[in-house]
Image 1: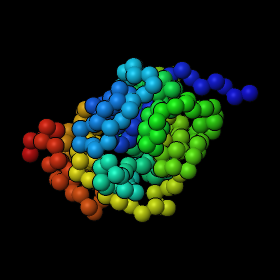
Image 2: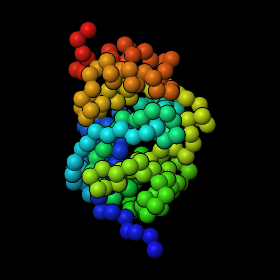
Image 3: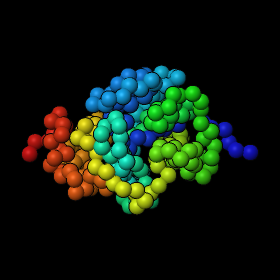
Image 4: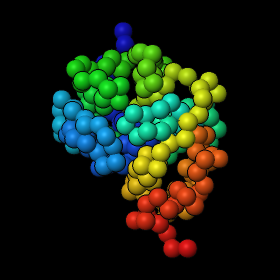
Length: 214
């Protein structure tokens, strides 16, 4: 008999939801800065219980084409070398399901059965780009979950992200991790899909609010 899904889980974002102001639109509804899509919000609009910086084995890459950002989307491949920086939000399991639904441009409607991903570490609930659930670790007694594509970085054509998308990632990394601009720029510039298209200096120049003195 499978264990019941926990009431609270960490939703770990490695993309634009690392920036809390954008993530709030997934909870409360609204249009995030720099985006062109309005989000309906979760059925439960309570704010995240906690926000924490985190890093997990694996890597982030950019592929497909986002109609919201007009460039590549971020995906997480746990088999890639290195570690991926993430922002973790402690939410209810219902809110996690609603966040996942909105990433697939669907209306939040039902909870997800998390028993399979908690038991095996990976569970594909559908064929979509963000319908593969991953249990990447645990934090303070709660499971850390994220979602990504069913394919690996080697199985998809890379696509560089837009300036608006990268700028949002810069803000999220600065806000949660407290990294200086130079470290953020180095981290992002080395990611597949960014590497060779955006230099570290170009990334550092995207958001003057997080720019370190030269």
